[in-house]
Image (cartoon, rainbow over all chains, first blue to last red):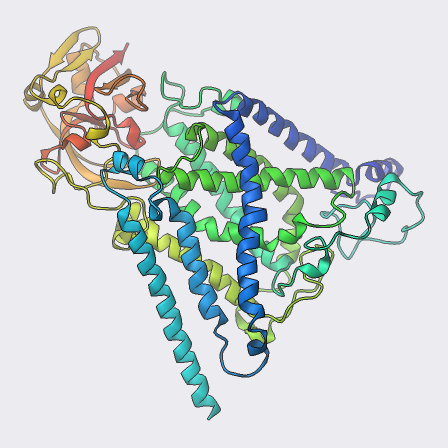
Amino acid sequence: MRPATPGTDQRQRSWFRRLYGAGPAHAVLMTAGFAFAGYLLTLILGASYPGWLLLWFAGAIVLHDLVFLPLYSSLDRALTSSRQREFSSPQGPAWINHVRVPAVISGVLLLITFPLVLRLSDRAYAAASGLHESVYLVRWLLITAGVFAVSAVLYLVRRARWRRRVQ
Amino acid sequence: MRPGDTELAPGPEEPDADKGQRPRRAMDRLRDATAEPPPGPFRAGWWKSPVRGPWLTSYFGSILLLGIPLMFLTGLVSYASYNPRLAGNDTTPGKGILGFYLFSWVTNPSWIYRVSQGTHVILGLTLVPIVLAKLWSVIPKLFEWPGIRSVAHSLERLSLLLLVGGAVFEFATGIADIEYYYPWKFDFYEAHLYGAWVFIVGFVVHVSLKLPTMWRSLQRYSLREIFMTPLARTRPEPGDGHGLVASQPSPPTISRRGVLGLVGGSSAAVFLLTAGGTITALRPLALLSPRARSVGTGPHPEANDFEVNRVFAATGIPVSATDDSWRLVLSGPRTVSLSRSDLMAMPLATEVLPIACVEGWSTVQTWTGVRLTDLARLAGVDHAVDVEVESLEKPGRPFRSATLASNQAGDLQTLLALCVNGEDISLDHGYPARMIVPAAPGVHCTKWVSELRFLT
């Protein structure tokens, strides 16, 4: 991506680099990429409901980068900063990851199943499958309870071991 | 880093000698004017995670470097499996040059669509935690300051819209589709196809730019080192101008191996709880698969106890259309009308074949029925031709008809199925008769068949 061989066209390259900010290969890649993306845009504009498509595309970025990610990181920050002292002092194994891990697993599972868990698509689901979505909330809650329970037991075991070592 | 140099071309080997010797440019002046970032995430001190850094990002990136192309390829395979060149089969009419196909879809091995589409859906779900972790690891880049450094830098950031937007859009629409959740008006097939191409453009551009950075960053630690380093010895990565390493990191609360365990563990949980929709051995664990549930109906519920796609009650077909008055019409050089008992009196074949849905679930059953080639001969067709299969469903319903290519119609395993597992198929599975085509997507195994048109 950058001029590697000093030679006769060195001056020309650095001229290009100064104006553009990177080497010609970079410019070729970008041109090709955006030209094809432009073609895709013409297809999208010809699709049924292009406005919905573009809205969902932009919404996907906004929703992830400016809503979802800040939400879970501030939750995590609240959880860790209030207990900061516990991590720096030798009071035994920290509990934080015994909350974090089951919470993340449970959260990811909800993220990939929330239409089922919250019964948001029950009519379409019933028409397709002949079944109802009512089982999924219970299943998700039980799985959540299960991973938190396993994590708590592991924490107690670690703590007991640590106590034995200290005494 | 030299002013104007983009992120992809930094590195310790960059000579910095000519700094300040060049005339001031517009970009430099812009940089001076915006030297002070606004408060909040634009400030370097905002980002606190001590484990965020090029190695971690590159590690997640290297998994996605394998996973995303596999997703894209299995997606293309799924598109090809519909035989889009045949009339009525393509659900994306405005596809432009994206509608290329390389071959007629195969019938052998019969499990090929089951494996490829199962991979597409299960891998997609399993990659969700890794995509989220990758996006988390690079979030400071969204707020880098100054946001505009050069033309090249701006184009690069713009291309990330294709990458991130495409990724989130594809995962979100895919997951929503397998759960029948449509909070939009666009057509899923169309949107998922276009989104895939937008995503892959962003992906190819990003990989082309970042592959060397990824490779270099991975050399920082071996996996063995990562797994040998406990929380107490976890330190931030050395910063090197990538803008990922926190300038004022918090004390670590999780080791890097802990992060990998957290992300990998989440992926494992997703896999174990959903993969049973296709992987029979994991079926008892598939508590969060949209399918993989018991659903037998009709007079022979046990023989018919496997996943349904579209129940009879939702089709609007009157029950009377499926009673003894039902006739199968064969249209070819000869037109033939057959009752169900006529069909039952023909030579019957039994085949063990999967029904594999685009939604990622699949199920293998034992089907008994009349070979399509035998029906073709009855209609006066003595060589393999394309066949349009019509169902009793009203015109306009999605997948009420499908066109089978001549290689599918000529395959000896392709049946007009009357029975499954030794009993009559249920109304929900397509009584009086349904198609079973080896390796075809489930929606091309038309149910409630009313007519077979041999396209000679």
